[in-house]
Amino acid sequence: MPARPGLPIAGNKALFVLAFGIILSMYGGGFATIPAYLADVFGTQFVGAIHGRLLTAWSTAGIVGPVVVNYIREFEITAGVARDSVYDVTMYVLAAMLSAVSFATT
Image (cartoon, rainbow, N blue to C red; front, top):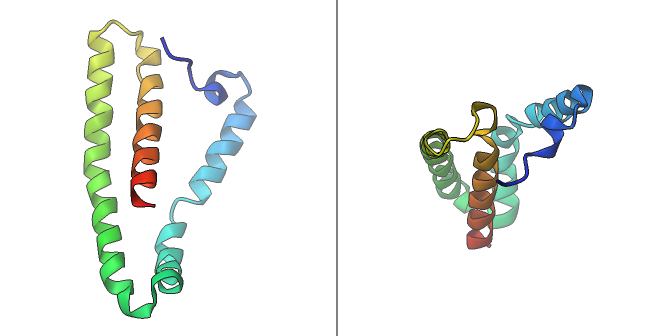
C-alpha cells in the first residue's frame, strides 16, 4: 500500500486548512495572467491561437480528470481498500500525469 498523503493525516488541521486556502486563492489567477504570459513568451501575434489551445486543454482535463478519478476510486473499492483511503493513490496518479504532461511539453 502506498504512503498516504502526509498533510491531511498529520493531525494538524490548521496547517492543512492554511495549505488548502493558499491553493484555493491561486485557482482563478491563470485566467488573468496567462494571456499576458503567452504574449511575453510567444509574441502578441500568436496569443489567440495558443490561448485557444490552452483553453481546449483545460476543458479536456476537466472532462478526463474526473473520469480517471472515478475509475481509480472504483478500482480501489473493488480491490478492498478501505473507503477512507481510496483517494490516496489517486493523488499520486494525477501528480504523475501532471509531471508527464509537463515534461512532454518542454
